Length: 416
Ligand SMILES: *Cc1c(COP(=O)(O)O)cnc(C)c1O
Image (cartoon, rainbow, N blue to C red; front, side, top):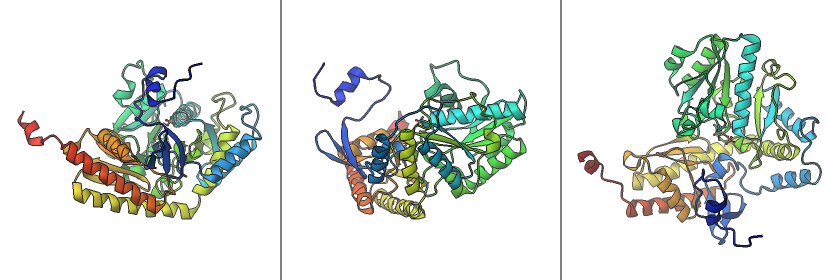
């Protein structure tokens, strides 16, 4: 067996090249801190892409995992298990849902939601009610169906033929939706806050209008809360903050606090279309995943934690505004709760990855949301001291970026 050291370089030799991971290899984490192979520490404003809502190695999640790990890992869906039933019951208590389907990733939860919408339309609307409407830009996962619904060419090109029956209209554009929705529409799917696509919040009027149009045409409204769910926006689910209730809600990322699990929530009437054998997954509702998610949900449903998210939102925004007063690199600072987007000024457009790289060099993990937006999605319980320490590192990173690589002079570019 090859005994050569495990390094970042090995990625290029043994893994498919569809990612471009950073130069470091993290080996352990605690709360909102990570350490790499060299023992260097990082403050985590990325949260594993909005996943580690309770930080790394939270004692209650570790306890749930190890306790369940010694009892029962997997039984498949030919048997029920206690953690799954308990978690489903709690999700029904805490949300509009009356029925829950568990899967393992956001894409799978959305796949289930979209398939259910088609099936429900088959049962209640007839064979012509097939159309799914989604918004651009948006992101719903990487299966062929969800990537097609997402409607971004960069994710579908080369994978054709794509599944038909999907229409796209611009996000936050109610007249555009009104122009295409009809009785042939079986579902509309929307992210309450665009996550991957730039951290843009749906307007109140937009979501209310989408709900009304769906009702008018008997189309199901699907909220993709894979990123906005589980306390991320300062509400347990973002729909609660808007006061607009979907027919189907999908959740993943933060649900297991880092353990892979997703869920599709819906009403009993709609769920009835998922008859025995019509859909399924081997791992969905796995006892280990459900035990961890159950422990996470108990913490996330605490009103004090959710109030803390809104408080930390203000702290982040104040700090980011302070940084921006000095460097003027951000055109807009936006987002809800601890899903924050820093849109770069024109001069810095296309360079969000440079900010990730500079931050990493200062010992800070941040994300991008497209080429023009730096995204922050830290743990929802990140201590205020670490917010300040992380913002200081961010400021140093930006200072260096600004001094080292002054943006291309726009006048020179225009003159060419
Ligand atoms: C991340 C994400 C997905 C996909 O989730 P996976 O677990 O990567 O399959 C879907 N929808 C939204 C809104 C997301 O942010």
